[in-house]
Length: 223
Image (cartoon, rainbow, N blue to C red; front, side):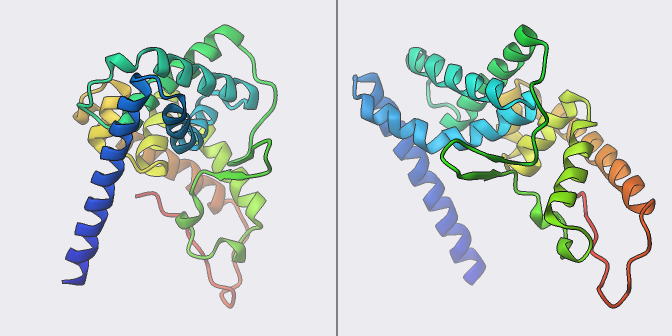
């Protein structure tokens, strides 16, 4: 009974957020700049995380997100509400991130899995729950470095599906809409991404010294 109540509450909250987004879109179309600024505030962190995974460059990611919101504002009349606003924005952000890569063809510096924005806030990519107790094996920075390298080793087409589905927790349908793919293609790429990532991480951990049983061995699980 409690589980059903929690699920109903979550669905209600999701519907409310969607309705609220649509109301803000309508207000933005009517010329209320504050309404669009609220949409930016709601979605910019997620879009920045995704752009960073594509570009691996702080400046490029910020530029891609800025262009995303500029184009979204210019094309609000094209948003029909058939999908979530966040899905529509993610699709634009992915296109802008790839365009930025094609234009610049360079990377300024490597990024960790946790990016610190100019205001000092951290934007984690939500990977801590992969480990039962990671601090028993490595410091946080060491674990992040291992995961960062493993993710960067995936082909871009697989990496972005993994990021959207497993890190940003989009549904299969939302991921397919964002990437303009059939759901079956998303499932196939996600499976390949998980298998490749599991293989990469298994090789890393198998090459490390045995862990003292008293401390307990944490494992990273790729679903």
